[in-house]
Figure (cartoon, rainbow, N blue to C red):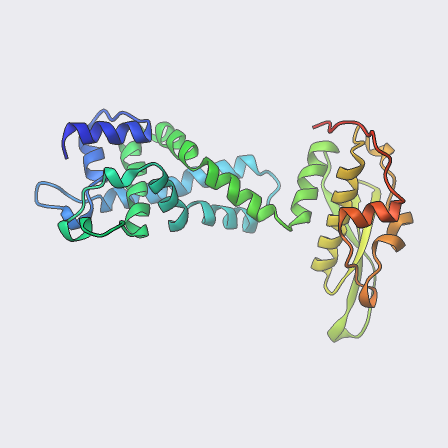
Length: 278
């Protein structure tokens, strides 16, 4: 690997190495290694650990209030082989990797090779410059994957979305209370209401407490964000008077949950509300 190829790689990753030996090693696949050219496998091992640390630390501080399970799911998408290979290809790293003749003749390098070289580069940046340059590289390169993973996790998870909204607007965390349940033990239905502080909002039926909580959270989130009057909690009406209109459905289980159904139950929210205040 000549200096011109090294310089090309440094331009692609936006990092200049103090010790060029690290980037040479990071770009050397095991199929082309020799006695004087060790492969990138050890750097890949290190880079995997650094990547996990940086992403975990970032999510821990950015997504306050998220559960361990939610953070784990988001992290697993960001550090996945698919995500790493996608970023590696988008940066054009195929031009920089040193591979054996047999692999070079293939039309496209395997996803595993592209993902592994990204981890090796992370390891190389960490060894050459330390944690902060490695952190910057990871968060810059993986920014789109992070955003996509967070949005994917939030999609349909209205409890999480309502929690973030309530903490930002009301400095409070939603809670849920079972109002009643009905049916035999093998087929119970639960009626749950969402509360923020002492204020009651939407309620909903579900075939489990978890499902009912999600439905109540969805209706509450949609009502609060559609009203758009979030100057103070007192001006947002409680949902108990809307419960009947919002929670009709087969066998008493709510199947509305849409913004349109909320407006229909309200008789239409008057236009001209205040702009979002976040």
